[in-house]
Image (cartoon, rainbow, N blue to C red; front, side):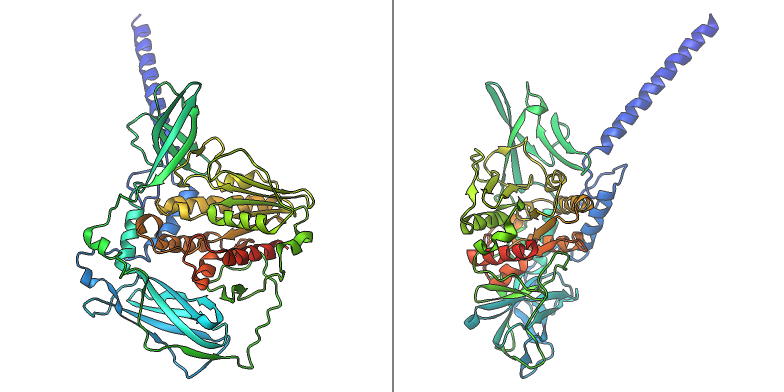
Length: 533
């Protein structure tokens, strides 16, 4: 009997131990499927570091190390555009078309002292108003208050050089730090629906985990979204979501806010020269025989604008008077466009200029609904679909139809008639940058999977456009887009895709509009058509 009692006691102890181990395992298993947030951004331990997180952290750290950490308390110690200087590195009496020109920029503070660190957000351009010509300059930061700007002289005549201080390094540092500190710049709301009953609740990427939440997770890509769980609803009842920027929220201190007044934003840095003279010398041949094709590097500058026409630097675009002339090339093509409203402009441009296209209404009524054009004569289809969250819109959009671009690509079989056009960027600006890094990384992996099953499918990637002066630097400013450009260069390097460099083109055209005019859209579409045809 004593043996039996001892055995029962042992058995109960063993069962209790197994239950405890199971509970610990379950908690650890749950932890493995929680959002994996880069350690450089947020504190908290994770027991599993995935390949996705390692890659995202590596990219984040590379950018983070290039941005100085500055706790500014006195504006007089920040970069002054008027005290800073631009001068020719190796001045000459005249230059030749095709020459490379370098200017040096030395930054000083308001007290007249040379800056000892870099990180200023600069933008550079050469232009000739009489020719309606412009081109961008590539900026090299030496992290000591001095910069070199590299230009290519594409045309002859009097050429003006302009270097703009978009934000001082102290302002750029604040924007970078606060962007990655929280999710508070955007509010989200979800609508849960069932027969004769609906409920609106708070949603987002970072909610209080002590509340009862609905978790919507993409385990493969480690992406997560949450909504507060309403009573009497299941998580499957989530029908629609919407979001809006909280431009009334700011983390900037009073001194930091002063760095973004009108006199400090997009301020021209003085030069010690008026212009340079460029001649067409005998040694330079302006004829480019090679047509632009996928696999070419994303360059900056990648070309120049003149008389409303974009001329790539290392290749040439197709010559046509109208998209109607490209009918033979477009025969049988399936063009999938994924992204935001800037690539949607391409959809509308093609709809306007290809007379045989017919709009097919999909019976959605919000501005970001899917678009479809059909050309029965050419057996051609063009579609546009928004990239999923983050996608800031105050109008409800269907949750059930949301898919990331990576998952959209995975659903496309691909062939030599299939073209995928994509862009993301603007809607990611108010969020911590790891969202953007991860999303681009997932897109790259999806493209690699696509090329395994269909290497002949064409993929065309558009970078962001430069935008207008805005009072909402924390949420919508171009500084964030400049960071996105660097990330895009890193992630899509050595991939057999075609780039349409909107960031470079809109700076060269000097449009300063996130939705540039038709002359720019036409040139962007021509680059796309060159890759296709």
